[in-house]
Image (cartoon, rainbow over the protein chains, first blue to last red):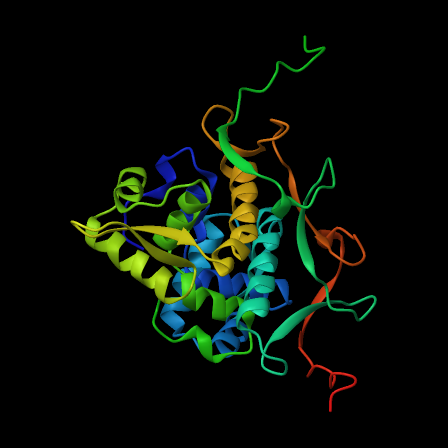
Length: 155
Length: 155
């Protein structure tokens, strides 16, 4: 990505890209959602050079998506666990996974996500939490988010 | 992104990143969803160098997210319109936008998406199309997608 900072805009897409706008970072998060936590687990899963992995893990910690937890003292070794922010990012990767499965998937050559409880593949669709409407059926426009109302009953 | 090809895996996230794993490409798609179509419109919106814009538009055409349509003959000028694949990618950007608004938004300094019909801001949540379950409440695991059944009644 060319390095104009995307953070300096009102657009939440641009601001998010500034934090994790990198393929490796997204694949590290994908693996974290699947339970991987240790450096050598990510390294084996991704086939990534260790210096790049180290850099991306550091960036994800710095941006608050992962947190480091020491699991061995001598030598010092760390696990990387998802924070609340890291968990909150998961719908983006699920949407990306559903798109990739639909567009580039061939049976037997792609993974889908299954509900562990039922064993059924999920079919993710974005809906509006309030109205329940399927968002792809709506006509949308961006708008600057207005200032929040004063909280009622504040002293 | 370090150039190992992400396309050579069973993972639909990795394959999708190989196509549009780039901040500028995602911001061009964002603008296309908001109705922009011409080179100079994207250039003015993004503040992007024209050679980079030209490269990313070409890539998005090549990968089937946008298609070129000539709107002027002398000199030749083109508009870039979303294909079906481009439209199908939109939920990824909506999920990214909702995440960015929640994590990095401040009132008056972030945009949200509103339903043009009602004027209400949408609050996107991923649900399972079949069961209606909110996906963030499910425990998920990846699985290689099995071969489709033989179509019944085939000759």
